[in-house]
Structure formats: C-alpha cells, structure tokens
Length: 194
Length: 235
Image (cartoon, rainbow over all chains, first blue to last red; front, side):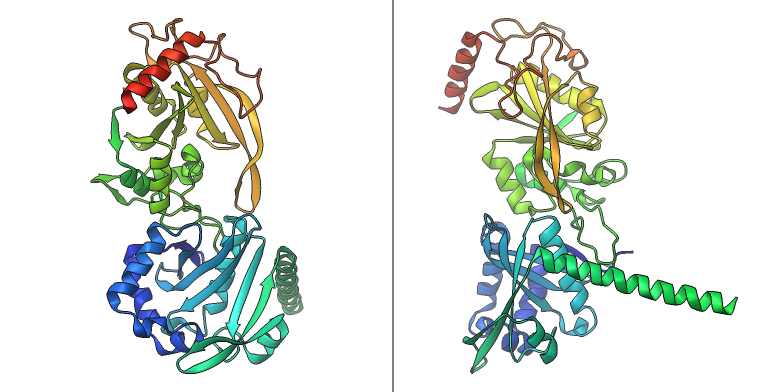
C-alpha cells in the first residue's frame, strides 16, 4: 500500500485548494493574495493553471494512503531546458505535522523521475515552522532574502536552497543505511532471544 | 472485426489519463497508475483488461504521456497534432497523419492484441487511403506485440528517446505498408487489415530512425496527388 501518491490537480480539487488559500496559516506562511481575491477569481486562476499554464506552472494533488487529499504541491519558475523549477507546498490543516515530510518526498520523487527535473529550488519564509524546525532551516538554507514577501501585514525574509541529484542520492543512501541499521538491530534482538 | 468509436480530444484525454501518477510513491512501492482505472468515459466503462490492465501502455501513445500531462494538456496535444483517437473494444487506438506525407499514418494502441490495430489499419486504408503506417513504441511495451501481429517490422531504434520512471528509455520504430498498394496509391479491393504487411516494399531497416519514410518507395506522383487532395480538404 503506497503511503503517498501524486496526481494531477483537477477541477474537482479547486474547492479544497481554494479553502486552503483562505486559511490563515497558509496566508502568513506562503501568500495572502486570496484575501483580496473573490472566489470567482480564485477559481478562474486555478482553472487557467489546469487548462493553459502547463509550461509555466503546474499544480499537483498529494493524496494519502486511502486516496484522501492531503495537500497540494505546485511548481513555478519552470526552466524546462535547464531542468530546474521552484517547488511550493500547502498541506491541509488536519494533516500538518504528520504527513508533510512524506508529501515533500513524494513530490520530489515525481519531479525527478517523471518531469526530469535536476534541480529543485525550495523557498520557505523564515518564520514558517510547518515543515522545518529552525535548526533544519538553518542547516538547509543557502540564501536568505530579506523582505522577500509581504504577508498579513509583515515583511518576511525567505530562505532559499536547492535540492540537486547529488542531494537526492545522498538522502537515499542515508535512508538505506538507516534501514539496514534498523534491520540489523531487529535481527540481533531476535537472535539473542532464540 | 473490432468496432471503432471515435472520441473527441477531451474524451480521448479522459480515457488516456490516469488517476494516479506513476513512480510517485514513497516507501519504495511504485503505483503504475497511468491508465484509466475503471472510470467512466463517455458512458463506457473502461475497466478490467482494458486500460486499467494496460498500465503504462498509455504512456507514449501518439507521443503523449498521461503521467506528465494532465487531461487538458493531453487534449491540447492531440488537437495540435490533428490526432484521432478511437475506442476499439477495451483498447484505445489512434492515428495522426504526417503533414508532409498525408498518406502515411502515425498509429498507436494501448493494447498488446493485434485486433484493435488491425481494425484501425482497415479503417485508415478504406477511409483515408493510407498506404503506409508508422508506430513509435517504448522499448519493452506490450503494445509491440500488437504491431508485430499486424505485419509491422522494426525499422530502427530511437536511443534514449523517452524519459520516465527516473531514466531514459529507447523507443522502437515500426513500419508497415498496406498490402495491395498500387503505384497510384489505391489498395486492392477486399484487402483486409490482417493482410497488411511490411514485406518487401518498404524502406524498413534501410534508413535511420526518425527519418524513415516507409512510403518513399512509392512514386512521387502518388505523394503529389495526396498533397493536392489534402489541400483541397483543408480549403
């Protein structure tokens, strides 16, 4: 049973994402343009992305084990020739904290394996603690851009970093090493009991 | 004979699109979700051994890919290339004419069985006066068996032509020529799709992939007549 799947964003998903765009934490952590946009405008914008903006922006729906919508990922600043894009996330409030990291991993895997993206640019406003602790953010960030965004009445600094193929290979090697370590520990415990 | 039912581009995209994207699963398991998993398509249930079982067979169909293209983009691509997609039993088949040689059809199928392809070839020969056929099939695809079963011959390999599931894949070029094709481009009466063959008369295997033109052994006058006819159709 897969843990997370990524599928194309469809018209049926628009109401769920519109609700997310109006959610206070989303507006503070990503963008608050929805505050001053009517429902019709939000729907039209997302429909335009589905139908027309394939080369410049794509939205994906992240689903949980039972196919329930966990959140959305979208890519912008797409440079198809250089195989580079910026990846953004919005996780629905009820799934925050638990499945966010898995959603990120699923989106990264899709972008790399199917869209052939070699470099993925991550951007997180530095007050945003949804997916990264302050320590994690400090470890990842390569560039800090002060006054990058103005959300909910405040200027925000943004942390930027790239995730490359080499990073992905290192992450996979680390995960495999961890898996082997755990398997070895279990095997040793079983042998000690028998 | 398998019946063909024409789909409009939106219906075709719906049929090609999957409900989940392949290769996107954490924890090492891969979902092959490129095909329609039992969803409704214009009132027809495309379940069971059809597209759902086809899995990755929809990838590369006339150059499209439901894993990387959403339904709107699939429909736009099919429209752009002037493609026609048909429901053939539990499979999809499709074709697009090459602008430079309208008597040659690029054909595709989602099934490994020859019957849907045979039905398509019969249709193309009868109603479009097609004289030769070209198919681009991802290496390892079960669909190759359908073309082999209809007399297609391998003409070349497009090395690492397609990217998916984290790596580049070869694409095989198959060609066939309609049996009984005369110098004027007409086909012999009563020729069935099963008799479609690539034997003897094509340039298969003698030219490089991508430039292979299985119909080039035909007299130029036939192509000129085709072009004139196509012009009349467009005007």
